[in-house]
Each structure stands twice: as structure tokens, then as C-alpha cells.
Amino acid sequence: MFYYYEKGGKLLASERRDLPYLKAEPAPGTPICYLVEGDPVLGRGSFKVNCPGQLRAPHGLEVLDASRLPDFPLDAPLSAALEEGMLTAVNTGRAGWEQVLSQRAGTEKKRVNILAIGDVGSTLLTGLKLLGGDVISSIGICDLSDQITARWEFEMGQISLPWDYGAFPEVEVISLEKLFDCDVFVFVASRGIPPVGSQVKDVRMAQFENNAAIVKQYARMARAANFQGLWCAVSDPVDPLAKTAYLESNRDENGVWDGKGLRPEQIQGFGLGVMNARAAYFAKRDPRLASFLTEGRSFGPHGTGLFIANSIDHYDEEVSRELTHRTVTANLVMREIGFKPYVAPALSSGALSILLTLRGAWHCGSVFLDGVFMGVKNRYTPAGVETELLPRIPDPLFGHIREAAEHLKSVL
Image (tube, rainbow, N blue to C red):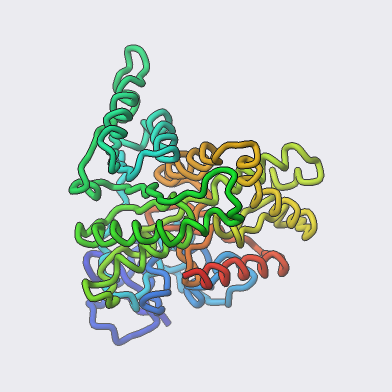
């Protein structure tokens, strides 16, 4: 049996009859927040429910696979909310969970601020400028070098359509003090990228220690600013840095967890987009891999642990392994040619995926699942972040997804 309450103008549902809130009667067409329990640190914060079983098993990888979720019959109001896409799960184990109740999914254009305008940042900036006029109001750029930001403000200011001078979002230089005065913060800062020709095999993980130190600094700034927008992790290694931002923003000045920082659903890692695009590149050029173009999926991190499935309905382990290997090593091929592989990541993982996110469209990115930021097909909706629910994930593929999660847990 389910019980209904009212809090902060929102309708809550629970199996508990003893919650200290006002009793309420569910009305048709009303969004519902279903209260679930979970670990305060490693449990998900809130998310859109697209299967009843996710309310029984809300935090693990099983939320991706309907066949692995338990049965959980809902009553009429909950079933209606689910059917209408208005059912949100909220983890009451997380400190400050009530904040979710006051969140509003606005449709207005967003202010985007980008930290670090190097090779990746400037390419990403160009993509957002040219393609983001429908969802971005303006773009702020910040870098340690005033010369770099002056250059890119000048360059971007001279990109426009004739006689339609407001078609593209304006770009302006901002100070560190205004970095979190935005709706979307894009972290592209990086330190110590191994040079082309180096013997470093895992280039992404070689950057973790240095880049994590930078993330910690800005995560604390986001906490101090009470930032309520979306934190986009683009720098390598994307997925561990997303988790670093989450953990560090929720620690007080003594390093003690208090849960008063970024909620897990406020953070997304943007690295899977280019891996998915690289898989498509190889699939277009090899008939044996072509099934990926219509039936395939990508899962896991931007690098080691990634797995590309040639197909969900016609899964082939050998073909999937080959496609995964080609995708994971594509950046090394570019380095062998003599260039840093940053253009495709900046656009496919960065600009294009961020724009799909802002449009509420399906895209590839890392969301908080099973205590890590796991790359999956997802989208943001008025009811929260939604992960794709597949009818059944083949056992070998689900095993690879679990291996990816375990790899990420071993990193952080």
C-alpha cells in the first residue's frame, strides 16, 4: 500500500505510513516524487523512473535492464505518473534531499561558462557558438591567460550571419569570481597532457592526479557559490573527474562529508560521445561492424573499461570486442599520425553532447550509477535524468558493463 504526502508544494509517495508530512490525496496528472532509501554518498540522488522495478532497485546497474528489475506493482496514481513521464525517485538518505522538491525545469535559454580555452576548450567553444543559438543565451570564457581569452572573445565576436547579428550567443570574458554565475559550467581545464610521441600507453589516466587537483579547487568554489546548475566534466579522465567533483564539493573545510555540495544528478561526464562516434566511424567502413549503426550501444568510461556492443538484439561477442578495441585505441592512431586527438572529442563529446543535453535529447554521457559515473544513453527531463531502459541486455554484455563499473571503482 502507498501513502501520499505534501511537502514544499510537491506530492510525495512512500510505502511508509508514518512520515512527518501533511497527508495528501493524489490528483490525476500530478507529478509525484517517490521516496526511496539509499546510501548518502554512493546512492543516486534523484532520477526519472521509467520502470516500476527501479523503485525497488534504484541505485545499481540493473536500472538499465528491465529483465533484471524486480516486480513492483503500483497503484493507479503512481502508474499514471509513470505513464505520463512524471514520476521521480528521490533518495531520502542523502543530506538535503528536500532541495530536489524546489527544482524547476525551465525552458529558457541557458548561460554557459567554460573554464580553460586551450585546444579542446576553443574547439568546444566554437561548436557551442555556431550550433547553440536555440538553447544558449550567452557564453562566458575564463582562462589563466588573459591573452587567450582576449583572443577568443575577439574571434567569436566576429562570427555572425549577415543581417541576423543576434543568431549566435554572445561570448564574453569573465573573472574567476563569476565562474559559477551560470546555468551550465563546462570544465575543460587540464595540466600535463603527455606530448605526441611519448611512451605513455594510457594517456587519459596519466592526467588524473594533476587534473583531479584542479577539479577539487573548482568543486569547492561551486560549493561556496551554492551552484545549482549542471557541471560538465570534459577533461580527461572524464569519469573519475566527474566523481572527484561530486565528492569534493560535498566535503566541509575539514574534509568531512556533509552532503552540502553538488547533487550527483547535477554532474555529467562528457566523454562517451566521441567513443560512440568513433565506433560509428569504423562501422561505416567495415560491413562486419555495420550492425552498430542501427542496433549498437556504447557503455562505460572514456577509455579503459569502455565496451561497444555491436547490437542489443543480435549481440555478437567477437564483433563487439573488435569494435571496442578499435574505438579505445583510435586516439593512439591519431598520435601515430603526429597530432593530438582533440577535435573530435571537443565536438562529439563536448559541444554536440552538451547541446543535446540542453535540448532534453538522448545523448551519450556519464551519469551516477552504482557509485560511479557510468557512460550510458541518457537525457534530462522535467522529472529528472533518465537512463535508457532496455528490455533485456545479454548476459555477456551486462558482464562487461559491470566490469566497467568495477574498473571505475578501483580508480576512485
